[in-house]
Image: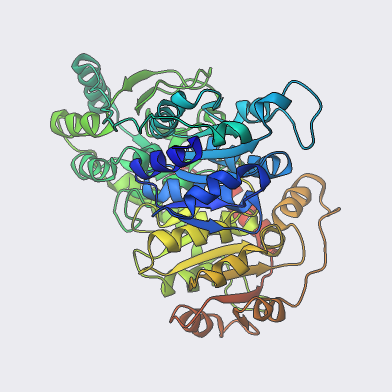
Length: 541
């Protein structure tokens, strides 16, 4: 068979459901083989959207999402979404075409060194040169993408290699088991926890990637230690749990730094420093730290402590069974009451206050519904106030933090979970960066809801400008009529025209009957109020 056909068979052997992307001349042989496969091809309107879809598919499923492009500009368009997967630790396999091997050594139409471009943003990348190596390359790609820390890999398939013949077949799949940590280190961690008076947990997305949510909840139930989560770790503990404090990551005098200031032990579980750097919760570098993860701790002068490296479930279950007594939860309840502070924000007014929109969304969604957030000021409000009860129900890009991810991500989420409501929450800036994927959602028959925080500018950047310079510059822009634009794509377009209409409009949108876009004007002057309130929080002693 041809190498292109073998490639598709190898994807089938890996259990691939979808390939997201855009075909081109140099990958036509691959596309021809894919056209007769059980693997579904999702034609996107931009390669960046394809990579975002594969990224979110990987985060939600735990299996590598697959995206595809042609050579040259197709490959360069793919890079942003692949880089986002790198810093969000999402398993992803990117496949790009290339000119024939006979042209790579000289100037050729659309040829650029794609391998070198992808190298900094992937865990591993390679070019298929010899037909018989293709099965091992695909198997290695999926294995590397799936092992901790998970992330993207890249395979380049030259046009002439795809046409070659081979008798090779797919490599059988093998399970990879994460080893258990040394018992002596676990014993030491248990002693540190017993000795601590006010320990605090930082739980990150590594808990989700490792399938350790239930183990974390068992440990917290036994220890009664207060838990904070990163943006990408939201939901690993139910926000109604008495030990949940809040979500961390605002950096500037983060409200939850109160808990860190008094804490005599920080327990990081599945924590990725890319989300919430230790300088924000351990500025002096003097905190005692227990690092529980599948990989060693990042080298950082403010992040030094006892490292428990290995299977997170094993580590947490050992600690739950070997700590001597639970902590007094009253301190953590005090912290939680301090940081909730919803009553400090007015809800009435038009354009709508951000807290009003988030609370309406929180009320409208079921526990297993999914929100995919774009990057912008709304992301901060969602992370602060949405408070999910389950993991992987709020998807936020918080590593690379790339704008434009929400609509493509919602498409991937709806393909994976057609029975759940899926809401893409975006700003008017982020939406324009992936606007073409509205057509993709409509073409696929996906009833997603797109909620647009409409403020006529890049609200998060303006927020930072006003904090630093007390004025705005270069962030304002015009927008189309969102309702008419939505209707032109085949969406129902709805506009929130008063603060008492948001609940009914969300309920209508989530009731089904096709994709919906909601234009929701917001008043982002509330951003400075949030900064002010968080800056005035005082640690209870």
